[in-house]
Length: 96
Image (cartoon, rainbow, N blue to C red; front, side, top):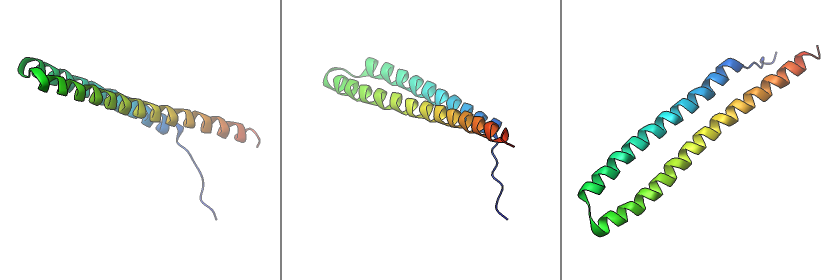
């Protein structure tokens, strides 16, 4: 006999929320770190070193923003896929 296919919709939704929460926490931690680095550089580095680091910071900021967008997008896809699967399950159950 074949295996039974089942889905735990509430669990999937909870995991999507966990992804979002962790992405937000990661973003907040990275922003706090970024602020402390900016303060250190502003108070301790001058001239070309400061300018070079400012360029690096812009790149870093872009990458952290991209990471957060990717994680948020993944959570949205999980949530959307879960809702679609649940709707399909309900519709198919109505056939019986």
